[in-house]
Length: 158
Image 1: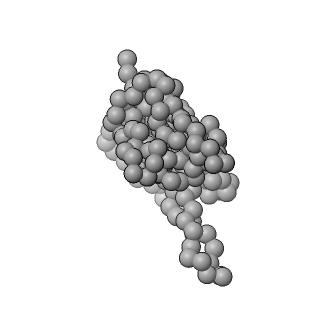
Image 2: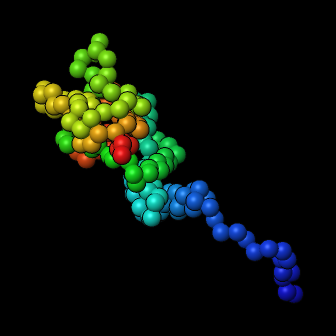
Image 3: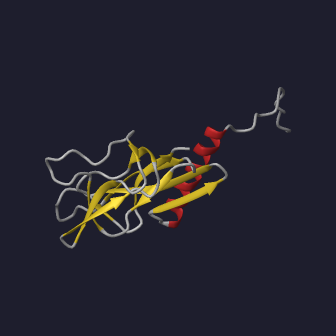
């Protein structure tokens, strides 16, 4: 017996948001299938990064790392990423009682200090490579960072 045909208008082409959601789903499936911890794809004006988030379980002998749901991050290609130039500990201020160097939404100049990374007891000031507005701060104060890890997203000003 033949399947009945649907009548009516053909399905509309997916919108940009629908394309991003579908791409994110496919990348998440790929992460699990290939046992990857992170994958990033850039296509046209869309950049999608999907990471597997691992939370440590309580310190019991039988407990192991517990995998949490995947986190997706969509970033505009117009934003400039400031990355960690070294492995160390990320600090937003010069001391625990001082105000942070920058907040989200602050306007910064090229060469302005954004944060400090402590590496081997040395405090290394990390400077902005462009002038613009801080769009996002991607690392929590006091957390460890890896070489090349994104720290800030800056929207460059025209």
